[in-house]
Image (cartoon, rainbow, N blue to C red; front, top):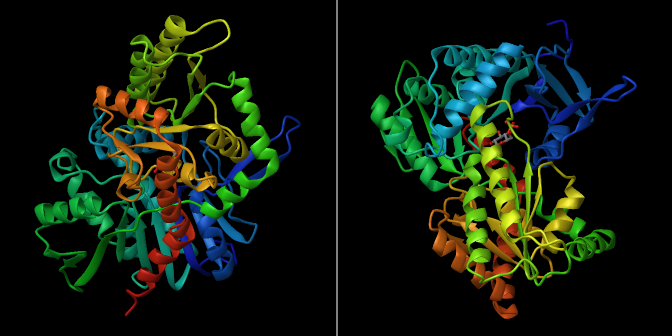
Length: 471
Ligand code: G6P
């Protein structure tokens, strides 16, 4: 590398996506804009303080860009060809690992060419990271797209301290063992010093896979990895969170409260606004919640004048066939419900297939009496935490799937099994009729948890544990 600052970063984050998006104006001007995800919010201060670099893909195919500095962070873009976007990103990451790790809700596809591409791209990430990291640096690898990077990196740079965090579930062995490359994945991850998971159950699923596939000894959170230089690896739950204060601050702004009031008015000031906010993904149980609401309308237990549903479904992975099918199914269902129950003045479902800025999301959360998080499987589900952070009025009811990681923490939510449509209908009715004192009691407890355990606490907890592994 001819970059004079190469190999000089003490803290390197490696993630499939960069924390910046490339924007091209209609007049051809190009610039990079920060993307405001929770991970970025948590890590940017750490990176600025410690000379940090971020290795990731710029999100477009065939784009080769030299490393550059942006807002105090060194950005190392990884180039993916059009074919690699299909095989590594859409294919192996999102049509093999994603459905497999989410309890095979959709059938995973196993293709050897996709696997080969996953190996090639993971190696590219590992090599770029090895070139950017200073001697003895700390590297934090993120998520299922990059599970081979820890081991590849350790082979290239044994001096590094390596952490890995899996943002999605880690499946039970009976499911994981379907994967033809299950052993390579486990060995890849074991290159890290600490492997973080969302839930205790994910960490124990991983430890079991290690015992079954490699025969290593594990006790509690510790895994003994034998070899020429035997090591121990920690596999442990570090539940991720959000920038809770940032969300609450937005919610307290008068113009956002005014916007929330206006949203309710635009919806015809119904008694109850129910809200769903998801990436349009088959793991989120959007169809299940529509079914429950549609049946309540059909049974005459709620009416469109009194109870409306707003469903924000942001576009996601649109070139993957399962996602295309899902979009068709959801839009068919929304059309049917609106056709059957809507009136000239009231639609039953307000369906919005686009993303919104954070300000608008906060206004929607404030406007919603009932928040529906009905995932069939979800690593954490940050929407649930965002709703709690925003509701400084201690009001609003959260319906939360027991299959979302967040339900381990938000114990006072109305917990539901999204497969049980009758149970979900009863929970919706309970939420709609819940007395104010009970809403307040439940929301206060959730807010306490979310405000205490924010994303800064999460990242410092992980990084402190990682530093403690240096001997
Ligand atoms: C999940 C994954 C992330 C991913 C995000 C958006 O939250 O855990 O790693 O970035 O979905 O998906 P995309 O495929 O657009 O990056």
